[in-house]
Image (cartoon, rainbow, N blue to C red; front, top):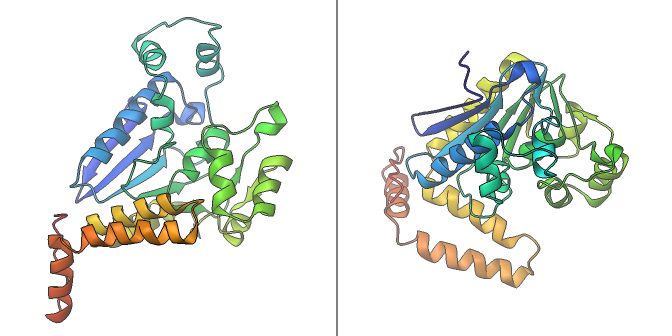
Length: 270
């Protein structure tokens, strides 16, 4: 496998982003953060990309979180910048948020494909994905309270919105790992499959989604984000604003034509 710490490729409208430090449990160091942020920025700016798949190299760990020996000392100024990656992180205070998908302006759907342990920052990255496929022997968790911290790269904010309050509180306050089966039961993941089927299953979903209107999928995700924490009337207003825009698109016209002509639609994203 390549020596690049982040692998990025695009094929048939599907982007794949791979964390590629398996010998270090894909722990996030400054170079990974900078390259990951760049990959997401490119995906978000490219209308030809209809869906993204996030995965990690190796079978033992999707991502163990931050590289404590490199990332935390840099943030705390216990060490100074030693290379271009350190300098890029210090120059852009928001780059970690972009890398971790801790943002509300990212509309491209993301499918997570995870094997092994999914904890700490790795779990926070997983929570930033819209759909999640995990191996049947995976374990997941937010363990930060055991280290005197909280998962503040999106973990608290997201898990408390995505599942029940009681279950989110158990994940955050007890800090234990849970099995893939338990994660499926509480609605934290979408699919649990054998390890060698994780990526194929994610790609089956991605290919199915890539047939949909990219405008409609992005709009649906944007409205989901806009509705979070809002009143029902504010949520209705977000729907109304989105559908008015979509109804004027070529994709909406093509969808109706294809239905009437009993054929598969050919969406262009316009």
